[in-house]
Image 1 (cartoon, rainbow, N blue to C red):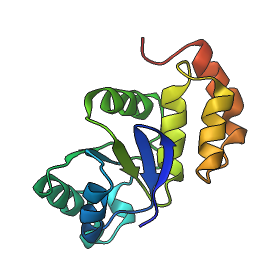
Image 2: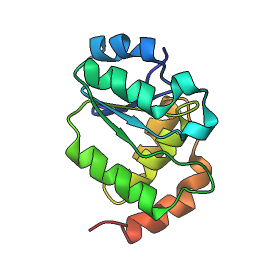
Image 3: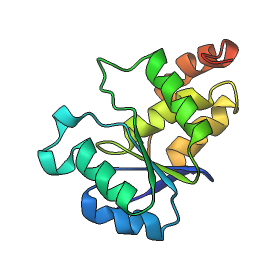
Length: 145
């Protein structure tokens, strides 16, 4: 399992499978967020299977699944709320970790310098510099007060 740290409280990874849960617990995570919709996965990797294993291991688990057609302000707002509510550190997963990095970047706009956000994602292996104009717009007018 490959985990990429974006901040002290938030890391991302590619698709989690049930056998990864022990590794997640051992790594010290307290919560898991799924950003990958079930229709992209076989049954063994669907949200219910991962959630059951995570909860059985003592982790908090929430889903905020989206794809390119369902991504928008409501998904960013939901991620912001989860980041505020869930105990950290938090591991978010999707196909590669990129989607989790994008939603985190938008969630941080207005709270962190855009350059710091992009540095964090680049250092974790996710090149999001093409999102700078949108992040700057969100930073000027945050989605959530």
